[in-house]
Amino acid sequence: MLRFVFSEVPEVALSRFRFVTAMGDTIAVAGLRADPADSHALLGDIPSGLSNGAQRILWAVAASDGHATHGVVEFTLALPFAPAVLMRDTTTHPDTTSAESADDTSMAFGGAIAGIVGRWLGFISLFLLVGAVTFRFVVIRDSSGKPDVFREIASVNAATLGIIASAGVILAAALKLARESSDMPDVSMRAMMLGSLFGFTLLVQIVVPVVTVIAFWSAHRDGASEHRHAWTAALIAAAVIIISMSLGSHASSSNHAWLAVPTDVAHIVAGSMWLGTLAVIVLVGFPSALKTPDSRVPVTSRVAAMVNSFSPMALTCGGVVVATGVTASFMRLHAVNDLWTTNYGSWLFRKLIFVMLLFAIGAWNWKRIRPHLDKETAVASLGRSAVWELSLGIVVLGTTAILVALELP
Image (cartoon, rainbow, N blue to C red; front, side):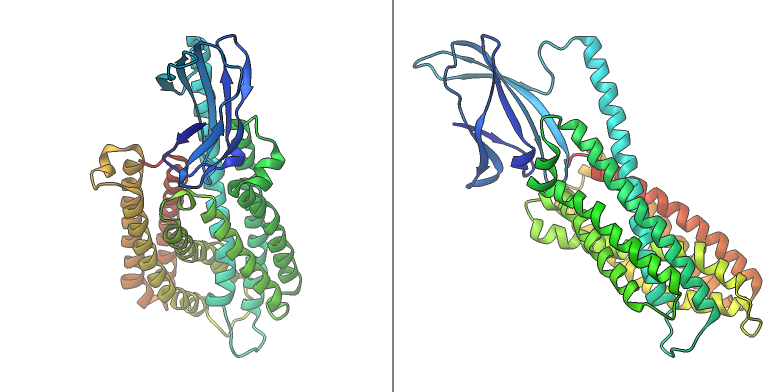
């Protein structure tokens, strides 16, 4: 029996093991299964008919976060009594030429960039999707039930942005699926999508956003006064997408998945409600306030009302982002010096710096600009400051995409 142990929990459906015998024959390892005694280990049956001499096992696995890795185990077999002697484990084929190695490196680098871009697009799209829903239910909510022109215009425009964001989520999931399937050519699309947690989460991220597109289209067609249920459907679908992203991330392959996954969900929810809603306020709220043909309510009053509704939520979400981020860091880093001695830790350290800058700008807006929103100059200053905050937010999401693509230390 073969037993391989990995640093993360491998997906059986995404794993392939093959013997290359001394005679040059390739034999697939049968009976591949999870080790009931250790979730990090895979078991397989040793094929019969092996002859003495140098042997190789070509292996390729992926964890539930979709990260594929492969390698070669070389050993010499002496039958019938001498045990197998392990020589080395390497991630490159021993017959690979330098030119082929260069090609593989180039392809790996290009694939990594494509994976990061896909995840970055996914985060931005998800944040805008959640932001559109939060904008509708929190920022421009109206408990009076009276018709309001500004609210109608802002709701329709938010629904339009929600449709675009939903399409972005679908595109990002498709890019991730194409990227990972190219890393696992021996795994069928059916096995990946239906036989692994990672593939199933991508399936969810492709199918469920269709629901949000329909819901947003319904809200766009009928405005804010009708189809509250459409917005509720978009809210539920957004929650499902967030959970699927957490189940397809580092959190699900952690030894403490029972804590890591809820922490990751809370981190994404809080971050998207904070930055996503801010983005919708800038992209939808401000322009809608300017375009509303209602001279009875000044533009500054509409902007102040949005900011005053948003600020308490943003402060709460910011605290949750920090708390869940620190918790996740403790679970994924073995020591403090991992922040500067490992690739993952160094990118996490960069993210922390950008998040601190985000807090600084947010604190400035809340302390110095928000109290003076009755003045048009203050509204202009808030707009410029919000653009800087969103720019930093995009950088934070970029570093997050890199972190998700990196192996844990």
